[in-house]
Image (spheres, rainbow, N blue to C red):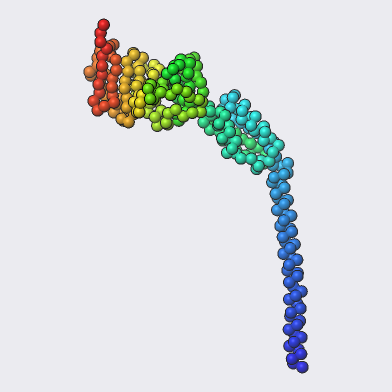
Length: 274
């Protein structure tokens, strides 16, 4: 009698387990279906609902040309989903076609807007080709990039940089091209400003790029100063100031041909009198 009770108890527990397992499977399956429904609903809401379709855009900065190009590019995105395009790709496309821009920053304005901020390059000098010095003037910025053709009536007091001669000559340039390193254009501008202070003039100066680190600067009086960019510009300018203040008198400056500051000792040459 005791054995029968034990056997019946065993089979009763086994039957209850068999009943519980299908119920657990149904619950898991139900949870998975619910999760899938929620996931698909969220996916549809984010990528296909009208809520996230681009409806407005705002552009600030730049000029008429760059703003016009950017507007045409962004209009193509109107009505499309705000998630389904590459911000960096659009920024690169704008900068590629508008070399006068230094920056183009595009931001998403939730839930359905785009904000584009453009920053123009600022000219610090004019870059000139020696073959056509009066016709091929390009504005150049602090990064050494030429970005727009200039005209004679736009020159103002900007420094003129000629591409040089011999092996240092650049025959052709295109907007958006880097023709000088950022460090080199910085040194040239610093030297130009320093020479203006020494000579006490605000006149536009001319710079001729030579081979290697050589730079020749032409003054409004017609004589030149030879610099080596590998030499500290402060030392070179101090030599120039001492030379003009002590050894080269105003009378001598009338016949001055050049001052050479490329070496440890400064040299100068006077023109031969006719």
